[in-house]
Length: 176
Image (cartoon, rainbow, N blue to C red; front, top):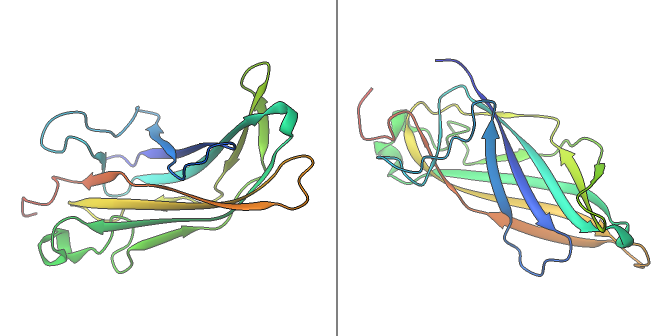
């Protein structure tokens, strides 16, 4: 099976008071989201697929927001008992660890969304790979950023999260 590349987009509004991120996962062949079937509701990956991260912060132009990503961590744990998941993988991204950390980021790029809104995009400089051949996974991601608006005396640290479910291979109930 060919290795596919996906981008996990984490989208936030600088003025939002909630901590939940809007997220999308897309690749050259579209989204891995499964709207129906046995693995409905999951983002389905194959062993060897790669994922990078893109943070999109939407803000008012007049605020002239500066944003820096300080940390991104994604935990991925099997929804089934580890002994029953494919070859005892603890995570879809690592056999022995449940957490992957992305700490290297590119420079922010800004583009206009509308007359009064601007989008600042920051991409990860490293990808993580799907290593588990088979299973169902509960994912939780945590994004830490520092925001500074024009006129603020100091930057404000913020934390956001998202929590999709993923699957690999057959989903874990068929022996390989």
